[in-house]
Length: 278
Image 1 (cartoon, one colour):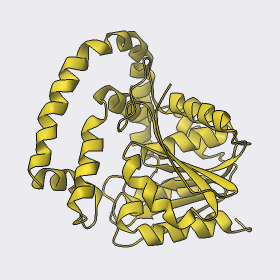
Image 2 (image 1 turned 90 degrees about the horizontal axis):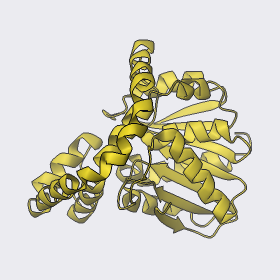
Image 3 (image 1 turned 120 degrees about the vertical axis):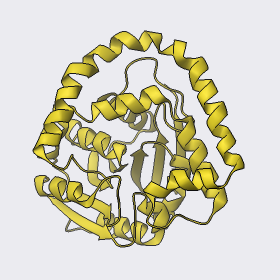
């Protein structure tokens, strides 16, 4: 399976960064770490410009793809940073393959806010996810509709207000860099809808909560105080369940701190990854 990879730095230690797309935007903001480590940012299948899987995806399938990538690169152990949906992938990977992950960073990720919300998500997963393997062979029939959807949404680049309005929920202050906003918008509209749906449903797997409470690695959770996608209460609830964890907040920041507060975010990561007492 092929997917888009961005590699930065040539340090002796290795990091893998994963999230629900927009790697082209996120990877450059690991710049403060390139002198001490090699970082790999992955656009997993169906996200950004990476082609989708030919079978059912979801968080647990992505775990195996990352391990396959690490094996191919000869990475016996690495630090792992998961952003948003990538956080769920990272939690599952860190507990399924504890010997492979040295330290874990969860950026703007958390379990659902209440036990009732989690119960609803798990019920949907249990009843719906097993059926997905039956419809996946028919997904190719939707490709003309996907192409039409992309052609229509691509016209949004002609109006600066369209990328700006799509970015608005993700930021405390939307950046003024129109080139970056267009790039983010293009990454957003190329994400396959089936991948998005499968990813959302897979967050209901009961293994996610079970894995969260037994994460063995030192773990750092980073959240934006003004994140309205993954609200602060979800991070607090998740941090309370992880045995060896710390929670750091970035003020005046939404769902993408690696863009909105890039220097603070990189410094926070560096301190955690280099702290011998962590």
